[in-house]
Length: 357
Ligand SMILES: Nc1nc2c(ncn2[C@@H]2O[C@H](COP(=O)(O)OP(=O)(O)O)[C@@H](O)[C@H]2O)c(=O)[nH]1
Ligand SMILES: [Mg+2]
View (cartoon, rainbow, N blue to C red):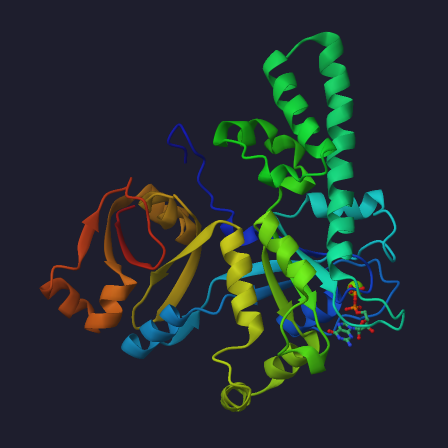
């Protein structure tokens, strides 16, 4: 089905976050902690590990309380553990190619002593970003050379030259302030330094509660990047516990939730995804949706038939449902809305789609 401007078939669920960084920085340890897998850690592996992760969502938990459904489903996203170049050497073409396929990146930076006696997270961050910048530069240089010769696309050339100047000043394309149209022109290149980036510092167990290193925190702030310290070993331990023991463990440490929950939500937001919710006696569920999507596009994420036969969306904001406790009460208080196909779905909208096929 097509409406002239967009082909349906939401690929929100296929979005992939790459866990990237140099070898030995703690990527696979983090990946295992997040996914509960047991991928081999230590140097040497070249295999890419893939794992789906449920996005923790208190709204689904609250709807579950209200509806007591047979099934509970959280939004999911995929993490890919991409092995990096050894030490801080150049990343090889295969690694760069793998990173290019990711929708967003989490760079893991080593914050523990690996026996070398040196821990330099700020330098490591910079050095990895430089690899991404160099890769983008070499792609642009080739293209610019061709466009200068054949003069086939003066506008494209001007845009690429602007990008090149920015990269030459050692800045990632992410912070060039490109507009939507420019981004769409450049999308085919899949530039590495344009991908959304989140920084994770892998810290040793005994430093989990300590303030993060100043230099890295400052660098992240200057670049406008979110930065989180995480201890893979502690997160694995928490993940392996039964829910009740988990709560107790966190309470003892004075935490509301594991660091990994905050991390996963941060990664999800980085993909520019929101969640809408569906509920009933059978299932309470969060669905990932690209920010700015319409009601009919949301319907399509559930099933193409619902989009094809779309009549209307009945919507209650989560906060209203949370406060009032039932759909009936929401109706009574005028919080129950009927929206058309072009309604822009908001994060936390509880939707019920009426359709006819
Ligand atoms: N002390 C400490 N060691 C870690 C931590 N994370 C990983 N390691 C160790 O560092 C080595 C490399 O970790 P790994 O996850 O395989 O790194 P990768 O090459 O980036 O995937 C392994 O021996 C891990 O046990 C951490 O947070 N603290
Ligand atoms: Mg690894």
